[in-house]
Image 1 (cartoon, helix red, strand yellow):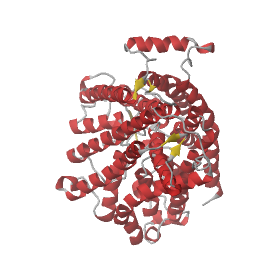
Image 2 (cartoon, rainbow, N blue to C red):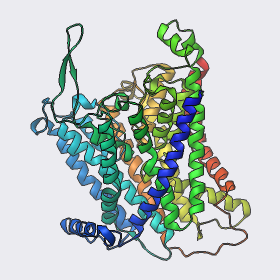
Image 3 (cartoon, rainbow, N blue to C red):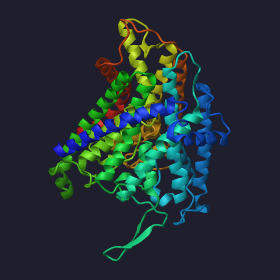
Image 4 (cartoon, rainbow, N blue to C red):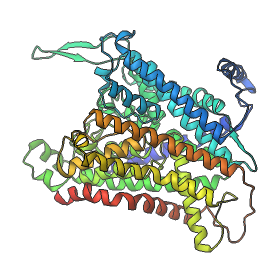
Length: 571
């Protein structure tokens, strides 16, 4: 582990906190202040906001119960799903298609629709040779904004419910959605898009270019309006690349500086939302402890993955392949890694993208060592709560916090409390559903995929590694991440099963989180006493990390023994 790599990681962490904290404070004001856009120099924004509510014929300031909030969320997402599916299926007859790409196949269009509606961005296609510019912009990029904004809106509603007392309402979906889009995502995406274009990320409406190689052959070079989509794919923890090879492609990620900004964007909003939570509920110290728990797991992932990749394996060292031997001698496993970025940046991206339900990559996960590849696999299985997706990561963490304070209450023999509210049977049941539903679904769908003839047809690599690739595919889709190991193919069966995984993986925890927020909103504040378990100290951090590890870790351990652990022992 060299000093340069460690220095890059430390700079990244410092800037993440330095930028995340003020952004979180700003976001708390956006969601908490009813008059946010009606005062000061930006009063004109309030007029536009009210105009939007009139255009969609809703009362943006009429608050909703969690049931009404959830219903509108589902209906809104369904409408956009139909819109996206229509664009993909009619692509060959629509404009902004200079390369005359045909319609997307029905099973791929359905899977892609579910993928982008749920903020998963799993891709059973190659972007540059499957999607027209219209599909990329009006279809996929729009969903990058909208699906991210839905997650952020739901989080704002849940946090509002935690902060309130004796109320049935937790906010208004339309207002939270609009403010997420206009006051947070859009400004940040414009800034990042300009930065990326300045570094050479392609942004054009011209058709693919044709070049002549030194040998006289002709080569087609894909291009298009990439920079605008890359900005929101990272900020919104979407992850779906304009190009098939994602952020390993120079047109998406040209150099070290663009790599750093894209990597910073992955965790910026999820980290900021922890501080937003502390500001909105008036418990900043508690929020710092939640951040510390998330960061501890993040740091463990980096500490495991980086040495594993830098040391490689004995199999690689003794393989007899010159390039592999050279890579091993110069510092470990460089297979499927960009020389432009090196192992430290590949590790940092691997851990960040799998902690944040982002799914973008700048190196191939499938070529990592068994130990290194196990890190993103486990990160996903934890429920994407280590920072997690925009919105979904933090409200997923709330489930584990509820379970942690419940366990703490059992230890001292009293009713558990969290932020002054008693945690009773209803909250425990909701938290258990939210925390355990997706891991259970991952294991169930993986089992179906490896014991059925249709499922086996999707597995191109046999043996232990083929099992790992299958497990990762449903781990990624169920947790709305979108990253993948290579070697798991797109069949009608896998696309359909993945569609089910993404839809249930998104909306079951989302509705559980809203139910939790609605339940807590009705409760009164209970004064703290000598027996109250403090959630603003180091003991809480240790307990929370332990609960996450035990709850999800014990569920995935048997699967790990069939995949990465066995593969590691073989190497």
